[in-house]
Length: 137
Image 1: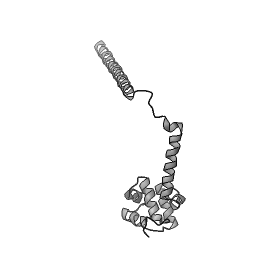
Image 2: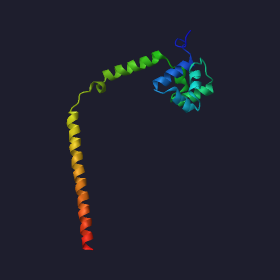
Image 3: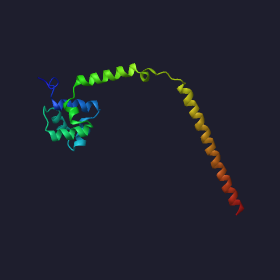
Image 4: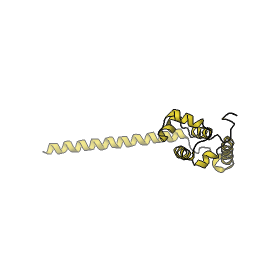
C-alpha cells in the first residue's frame, strides 16, 4: 500500500498540510531547528512520536488533532462548502463596481498633484521669508 492511500500515514498528512500552507520543507526545517532532509524523512514516516508531532503542529500553526484527523476528502468538502456558502450569500454575489476604478485613480492623481503644488509653494514661501530675514541683518 503506498503512502498516498494509507489513511493514517502521519508523515503524508504533515506533508499535505505543509503544502496547503504554502510552506517549503526548508521553512518547516528552520522552524523545527533541523534540516530539509530530516523533514523529508519525517514526511515519509508512517508514525511519529507525540512530542515531535506537537512540535510539528506548532510549526505548521495547527493542532495535533488537525494533523491526526486530516484527510484530502475533508479539505475538498471544506472548500466546496465554503464556495457554495459564498455563492449563496449576498456577499458572494455583490461583485459589481458602483464606480469606475480608473476615474478614482485619476482623481487620486489630481489630488496628489494639488498636494505637491501646495507643498512646493510652502517651501518657496519659506525660502522667501528666510531671504527677507537675511536682508534685514
